[in-house]
Amino acid sequence: MLPNIMSGFGSSGVTWERRSEKVSEIVAREIVRDIARRRPAPNSVLESESAMIKRYQVARGSLREALRILEVHGLIRMKPGPGGGPVLSEVSSRDFGRMATLFFQVLDIRFAELVEARLMLEPFIARLAAERHDPDDNEELRAIVRQGYEAQTTEAWLRATDAFHTKVLSMSGNGMLTLIACALKDIFTERASTVYVANEGGHIRDAHSGIAEAVINGDAETAERLMRDHLQGYAEMVAQREPNLMDEVVDWR
Image (cartoon, rainbow, N blue to C red):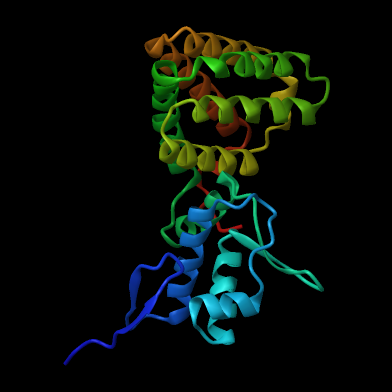
């Protein structure tokens, strides 16, 4: 017996097949393809409901379900009222991490496993950053390190240390590794109490400075070693202060 197939055309003009899966899921993928192709700016209002119904040739209910799928995954948000509709979100590693925690909880993944994964991944990415980085990023990285030294409040320090790790990861030249590593960082930072680090962070500031100079100078081996030592010390500090955290399941939030 032949599978149930209904052919149609996506907005790109390429024929695509609607198989036995839900139409809303297929339409959601078509919307994502169009967003990736058009590259609208974050916070842009997408097409109206009537225009989308015409573009994707689906019923209103299927379209709304497709938009709900994208909203749950953090790609869009719905703006109510006149001139409203689906608005493209500024997608971040936090959205990716939040989605991942759903699977972490179901798979019973412990915080200690997340820490171990970060300890394996981020030093390697620091090595890549030293090997591949764009020299135009050097001054920004140094400026972020200076922000850490100049921070006068806990909030300013936490912003600076988060910016440091995000910047080093982004200099790796590999978007996939950057996204995954930033998501692990975001989950770690959200769940570990980091306030005390701001009060005891002199050696962390120095570690950031050393890592930054190794990356800027293209010293891959040193960048990897210093990042590993830095994260290992940070993880041990958290484990000492919050011994129960390491055995907790990373729950969906």
